[in-house]
Image (cartoon, rainbow, N blue to C red; front, side, top):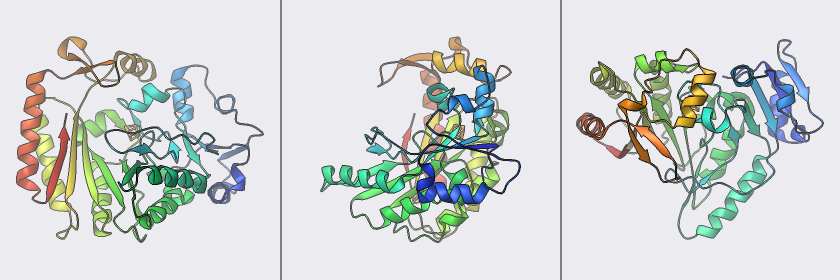
Amino acid sequence: MFIPKRILFEKNALNYEVGKNIYKNFIKEKDIEIIELSGNKIRENIPGDNLYDQYRAGKKTLVVGVKKGMNFASCKPSAHYQLPLMSGCIGQCQYCYLNTNMGDKSYMRINVNVDEILYQAQAYIRQRLPEETIFEGSATSDPIPVVPYSNALHYTIEYFSTSEKGRFRFVTKFTDVDTLLDINHNNHTEIRFTLNTDKVIQDYERGTPSLDKRIDACRKVLEAGYPTGFIIAPVFLYEDWKKDYHNLLIKLRDSLPEKIQHPLTFEIISHRYTTRAKNIINEVFPDHQLPMKDEDRNYKYGQFGYGKFVYPKNSLEEIAGFFQEEINTRFINSEIKYII
Ligand code: SF4
């Protein structure tokens, strides 16, 4: 659970139930600075004159705000739309895509006007009828660490449980799932977990739970009947990568409940980076050990018009062959969505 060092309440945020829940939960905590803003000036209230300091102070900050514009971004290929309940994450994964997109806004933000956001979701659902519409809750955040005191995910899961054509999904590395287990989700919310080897977690995923704890949380949501999937990402190639990813999959298989209601899904994503991301990572984590030598990679243009440094073609083929074999032989009722 995220215990922030400071909480900024934007104007009007305390008029909403989620805002009130958070306020009540923390108002008596002496070590937490509570700041009620008369406007929406976030940056001025988070210390730090440079990206390095802003990043670290932001990671200890929770912003409780009201979502204004109600145009949802598209979210291909994972879903039709992003559901803008939250942004930011308390983890400090050095390779994180949020470093590039939100480098100086590393704080966790919750939008408290959940009813209005879900009302807008319903409008998008109507537009696509009779097709289903899928909303992604983690496109710009990891929503789980604020679950125990915000209730925002509860509302959302309950809302989609009664939606005929709306579906919800999110992905997490965190483990505060206990309060989600008793919700009547009606199989309309899919929870995915991002997993990696112990070495990758220790070397690059600061501030996130261990593999064992993530697998324990997976087991709980499976026992609660949620459709569940795994993102193994980013896959790094290092000396013992095959042995370590093999052990990860064995441990996962041996820890899961015997009865699983839905096919498990797997998404495998090899490590990649842009030049912009690399420059920001070098600034925010000057001592990082991420393997980012451009000369070891191939440059590939992506669907969004900019290029990324990916592993060479033969390495990508080796990754694909390895995970296909490992997953198909160990997880009978499963589907590999993609390996990239
Ligand atoms: Fe980024 Fe995910 Fe790590 Fe959070 S847990 S810092 S969203 S990679």
